[in-house]
Length: 287
Image 1 (tube, helix red, strand yellow):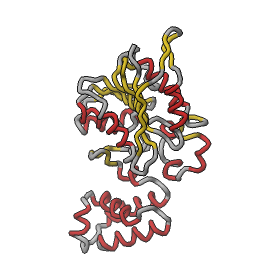
Image 2 (cartoon, rainbow, N blue to C red):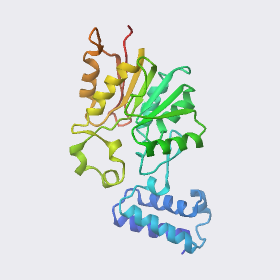
Image 3 (tube, one colour):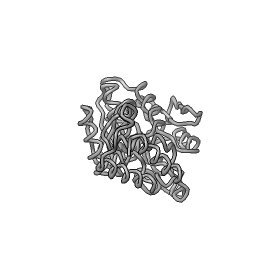
Image 4 (cartoon, rainbow, N blue to C red):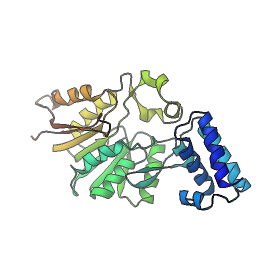
């Protein structure tokens, strides 16, 4: 069997299972089986596929047909122009999250102390560290996720500190300039309606934010109000239909103690390329 025939057969198998982008997926899986770039597939289209490569390719096709995301099969995902290792212990970084990164870069100075909450693969924290040269820390409640993030930081030579904790529990009051997070925001009731690739393979601890999907936002906003310095920034990725309740949380009165009450300022909503609200930025007022 030639490489060209292998791609055609793989594409047909994926099409029959209604897998999105079947041709591209077949190519990516064959590239992974061969450990070659896409250009190799076309430059050597008449080359015979070895038995061992066919065994690997067949297994990868079978896994994808069963619903396993391509990124978990190859173990890789590109984010902000860099290659990140991913495993089922972490969410697959989405292109939409690059809007959150860009909004954060615009508000971070090189001397700032920054925390990425719920770092997962470390894609956000590592990108911010490399793009801004700020002092970046990354937290996650999942130690397996932190292991993946740490390996990505080492591979990309990113100076990020990793901390196992719930949200921002490890940080002192008024110790940070910027808090960034793509938190769990899927309502638990949406579980049956999710794509099988998400529902059956991505880590639920990083997906579901509680019964309404807003519970982590509520806790994180309160925690950020405690750890941010005056005029510090909080940047959050938004879930579907979460803009109004999350904005209401920020516009309501916040309190660090019984004597001090003030509301978030400079609230800004950034839309994604489809025009949907994707990122919400807000600044803690001065004292």
